[in-house]
Image 1 (cartoon, rainbow, N blue to C red):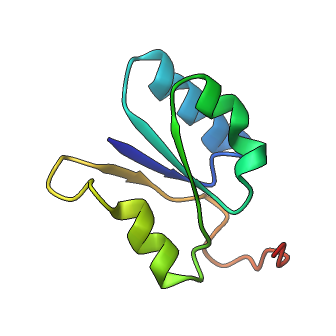
Image 2: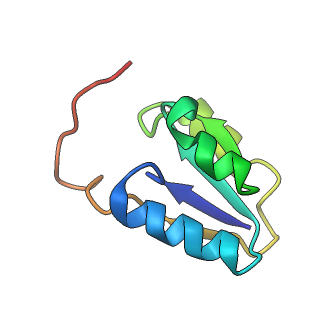
Length: 86
């Protein structure tokens, strides 16, 4: 299982599509599930959450511990403040 954080962005979107095309199990962690509908249609599990909310991060990680999860962080998440879209 791969947990993709920031899949609705350009770079991670390409990575998400590549993993799905390769038959990998993918969970997309996003603040706006509507923007991730295309990944759900391709077989990804979409979970709503925000990196600033510990409970939603725990939810995204639920059922993946001990199963070889690959975690891909959003490349701009560190060091760049993004607008609050809540």
